[in-house]
Length: 384
Image (cartoon, rainbow, N blue to C red; front, side, top):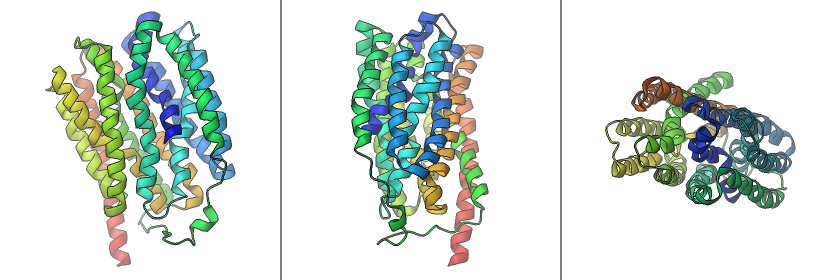
């Protein structure tokens, strides 16, 4: 969790500096959103590549390489002189470097737990949201006095100095061979879908939910600026949203261990859709704080549920790659959704249509989850 909290800065730092980068490079909102999109594309690809690597050689070597790339990426991004250079640093180094602390870490820790696997996965996944809680609160104060470039350079130094020693503590390989026969071990659950069909269904669900999720998470700071509340207020709302997401992730882990990951996923997706609706009529400062809290409590546990479903219904030896593919789909959803919201804003001059776009994608997600639940229930009834 500590490793993910530090390394998770790669997902959130670009959100905080978005207005400053837009002003310095003199680009429109859609172009200023491209570094975030590049970060998420690199993050998505890294989840698959690093995930496959940990299936073959364990966690620590791929994670060490990724941690060095992350720190170097922040240092190089602080020296860029164009939006293109900044975007490349975000995508090729920061995005790929950050990937090691999400899907691959979740997949690896799932091998260490048979009982209460949901809680273990949720706790590891909570680190990225803790990062989103802490870093956006700290960064604006440094930026006010030193600027975004110094802030980025300082983050790079912190990542290199802390993540490398932490990764070296994780050199022991996960006990894959012992897991199948250990006490409390779980067999792969039956479902009337082929592994490929299940993978496709999870990809569709993950892409849809994160297209919706990206609107508040990527644009809340810029949205608050447009409403006249300032960057600091927007960063505070992002921190509140993600702090609530930590609570939601841990609670969803407990719930998944009791009622199953599929049902938990459905509950979270329905609540996320409802909370997105609240952003449209409620744009006062106090209201936005409350809605951001509700949104965080609704959506935080969604993504870890995909990893739990993979471990419940697919072979353990494929966990790194399978989880990586699903996480890649969710991150592509965040990347495309983040860019699309900026594009819609440029077309309409308002974020209202962008919120409606997110709700539409959330409905696609709910259809996919409903089909998954139906197939899982049919298989469980057939076995009974």
